Amino acid sequence: MPELPEVETVCRGLNQVTPNQPIRGGEVLLPRTIAYPDSLEKFWDGVTDTTLQWWFRRGKYLLVPLTHPNGQAAGHLGVHLRMTGQLLWLSPHEPVAKHCRVRFRMDEQHELRFVDQRTFGRIWWVPPGVAVESVITGLAALGPEPFSDRFSPDYLYQATRGRKRPVKNALLDQALVAGIGNIYADEALFLSGIRPTTLCSRLGRQRIARLHSGIQQALTAGIAQGGTTFSDFRNVHGINGNYGGVANVYDREQQPCRVCETPIKRIKLAGRSAHYCPQCQR
Image (spheres, one colour):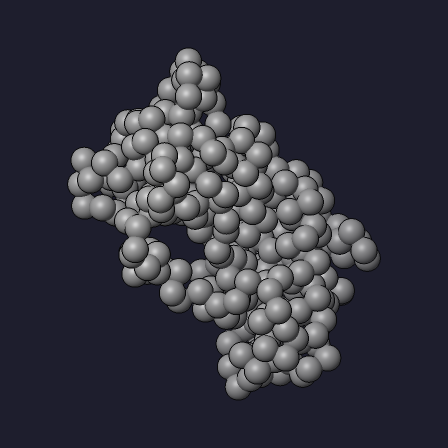
């Protein structure tokens, strides 16, 4: 599933090509991709002949305000890529991929396509004057952004106090911190020298401060590499992310640690894989 660095990469890519682009119309090839409104007619009535403004990311969600030609607000378009979603900026003459779910016609040279093999991705149109969180309800449950002022070492320490669950599981909780998934939780724990099985209640302020730093370092590195591609992730131009080639522990079971050469271990925690170095992480 795309995590914060992948979604941020898509967001930045969209902001290079789509601002001030008009939506002329389009086609929904898989109706359940549209999560709101409750009919495709209402969806296209809402977004057709509007103009895309600047995209922004909240957790793993992508959102963009829309305006009418007279400048009045036309609501928001929201997208969640889920496991395999891709937003691709293509020529309308490009052959339509098997797993294309929605096509937005922009101008004569371009269209924005939502491609999603596993079909879990969703798109919303939120009407003007309606709170985005009231329609895209998952937004209301999100914790602070990892690079925000609110996400401080003290916040992380207070939020994990008394929690008798593995720290890896805690990092996957979007109510604790928004945008982190399996890949960057493993990487953040490696950078902070903490084993994924360590209980939150056993982490003092010093180790929490290292974890806070490790989270930001891992996400920064992921963004710099354009995200991670192990199977489906692509940026808006269809290019793979590069972080997988430099990951410290994720998906590197039995490979030597990049620091001490100890073989990387892989275990299961709450049904999810966790990768770590037995020597570097305690």
